Amino acid sequence: MTAIEMKYSLFKEIDAIDDESMLYQLSAFIRSLLCASQKEVAVEVNKEGIPEFIRNMSARTGMTGKEDVKEIMHQHWEEKYGQAVS
Image (cartoon, rainbow, N blue to C red; front, side, top):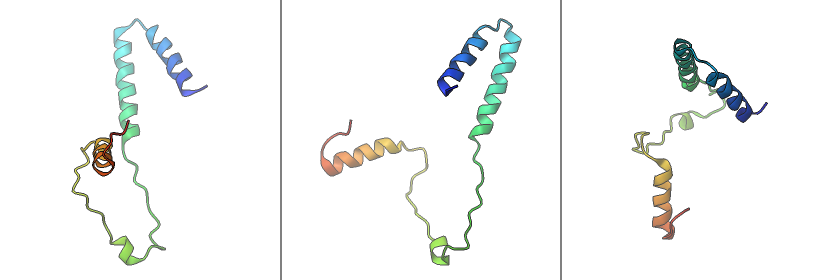
């Protein structure tokens, strides 16, 4: 079963529920699953083969992480090549 088929099947099942309290519990459960799946998982990196000077390198962009990177790339393209990207 593909992801689209699972979504459609789940939608049909949820659409058949008439009990409002059951729908509330189901929505709270799904929200908790979605929040749990979005948490960043810590990954341990094997640093043994990486030279010290490379491990101490960092790239500072001055970006906060809230910028629209796609828009920044479009602006860069327009500045560099003088035409819009579609």
